[in-house]
Image 1 (cartoon, one colour):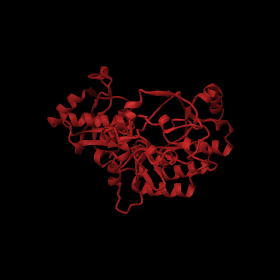
Image 2 (cartoon, helix red, strand yellow; image 1 turned 120 degrees about the vertical axis):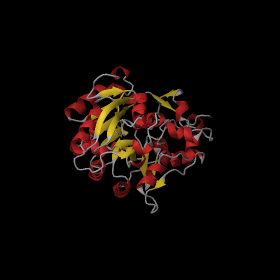
Image 3 (cartoon, helix red, strand yellow; image 1 turned 90 degrees about the horizontal axis):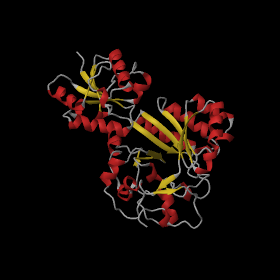
Image 4 (cartoon, helix red, strand yellow; image 1 turned 60 degrees about the vertical axis):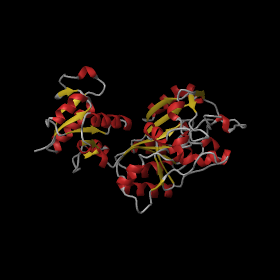
Length: 376
């Protein structure tokens, strides 16, 4: 006899979870919990749609055995759903997640279709620099690419070694972003893409670019993007705004999958002093994990503090990153460690500084730390 479950969410994502469980397990979805679409409560949607409060009542009375959540949602959304379950009396052991690989493959060859959320070994999004320098040099770039002198290319061998080691610890990553700097500057970008797809066949792969060089791309890169089903996440800064129509035409003619983020404003992220509550900042942020030179961090920006410190002196702590080659590290330890704040979190004011936005501009020759830090 399988478990009677409630699926958090009342849309297509939950319908897909129901179909997988019905086909490959004895578990069944008997209700759906509204996900901010209050008009659906009480209406028929492949079963009944109920509120989170009703979910708690049914669990307390033994009419349902637990709650299942699809990881197709954003990480923060999943965490909010988990909090709502706990608030309404669902025990940790009865809150289950459906991992990315199950959703991508349909679950036909996977034994455990759902796992308790505290035992879920999955990374939602991981960003990896393949180039540290950039051809645009935005003054308030959080990755500190504007302070990189000369060309700094990541070596393919190091990249592959680190990604394979990470796969030993976490074999399911929902999204991998190849970033920089400007990744289109790397002459071996197709090789990075091919190896990423080989090591993580079920991940969504994106190349995050300012697109200045896109229309000069060689045919081998274009073919590689399509062969590996890689998307281009284009940060459209002011110098490229008038090029949008040409970019769209180019992408359409070459069969490219692109997403445009029009960027006109930047914010200052770090303070020169530890002014903020690390736990509060950690709960707000932590969705841009990064991998670099054998270390993984919950905050990719933390992996490039060295460039800021080389420019302005050792103002920010440069100790972030978990050594993925540590022999004492296992999968669960890594996932739990990535949820914890670290020293630099006390210097990060991202939660509060998004209201203070600055016009985009290139790095000026007479730049000072006062132009970059929050409280200067």
